[in-house]
Image 1 (cartoon, one colour):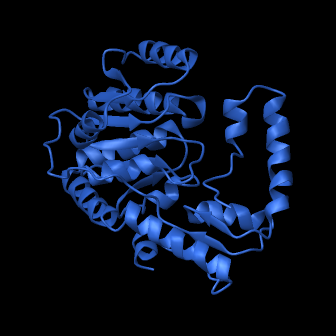
Image 2 (image 1 turned 90 degrees about the vertical axis):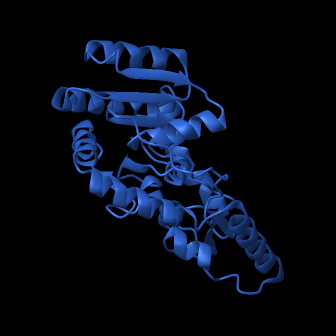
Length: 276
């Protein structure tokens, strides 16, 4: 079984009533049919979720694959710039990021927020309206979907990636930003807490816009800290690749088929996983 993440709280953000309540209640029930199946997953958070649901079979955690990024560092923008990359949708809580940025802007008196990605028109309109209501419409840039090169360039130029998802399987854009020499600030939720080593490669905060704002201020006002976190994040990111992921998946499937070493469970930091 390949399981990236459970939906759980996402049901309440992405699905209308009563389907959200039905989905939330049924998810643990239908997954029980797979409790003895060997599982491949991408984070300790998902492994823990499965164990809580009574999964008894072997669970192997494999690192996510990250596409190659030209890491010849680009200079950061002169003004504080924060970037979000992903779907513009309710479960990503991009509205929290806009609120956090508005508070940051009021305190720092300058800066930009770049939103890269698209989503339902209704949600994007609500984000534009929120930015206007908070007085930062001219400082929030909606870039839409970008090609890989342009996306990576903007990631490299920003001072930090900001994420506020309800949960993730891992948080692959964190690794993309790290490869570009940019640290990530994120809510301390499943998946994102696996992709970021708090105060080592980035910052994890309680899930409130004010906590995001405080972390944004910390990163902007302490250039040395920003450089140290970004540097360690880039080094850590070099430990994972599609080749490592494919090799671990192949070995795990082979062990499962032959019955050799099936009980082993791989866990640890990204670097430890890559070295296993």
